[in-house]
Length: 112
Image (tube, rainbow, N blue to C red; front, side, top):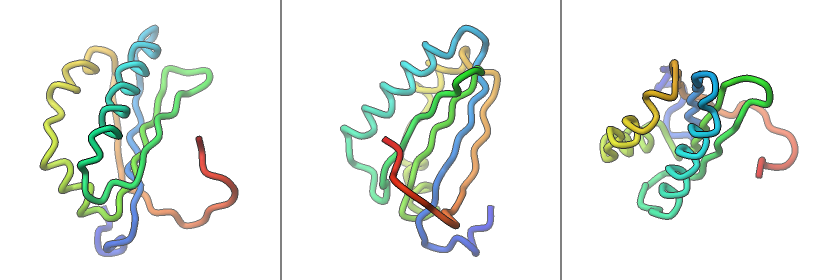
């Protein structure tokens, strides 16, 4: 995971989902509701923001969350109970893969 290299600098958690055919609209609805709930709670120390992206021509989605550090994200994971949310999406996805990323270069406006 490269925690030593990342240290306490901001990190981006990227989770890529392969959604089952015909289930993308339902998946996006559920994920959007979860993101909205997460934003309204505003109780996560170190959370800086998140985005949910939908592929244009395939059954894929990407969830992106920015945290102050890897430690902040891992602390949030320990606090949160994802079992209820996972129960809502588990039959809609074929798989998911997540990892930490750091911003190495940026240009232009933020995504809205």
